[in-house]
Length: 177
Image (cartoon, rainbow, N blue to C red; front, top):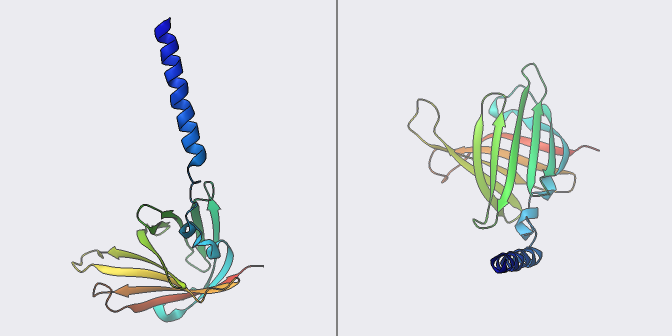
């Protein structure tokens, strides 16, 4: 019986120290950088310049904080003859000091992007190797000219490891009332 009491006391001490550690630990997603994408949260009407050759020029993007506020979830859809829809999940990774985003869409697209704020601009980058090509292409999206009711989003490509960038398309965001 004495062993049981020693075991029970040990468990109580262990549980108590875990609870104390939890109460003094910072809450998840409490790093200041974890709020860098807050400007994006909301429902947006989107339109884009046809620099990328798109004939579809309007859509909707709805962004929400989920999973206890730690995840930014995007739901994007484009209007037109050939509807396009995609979703992304973004999280700030404090140990790495970067944002990480995973994108999937109805064309089978899958991208993993990383990055963060550079001054007043949010930049997320990925490297892809197009099918039947040995050249790795860097791609990036840039959020800039950010205000409470609008911002601009560019998608760019680089064939020289990011030394120069070529505009693929630009999306203009207007917050839906």
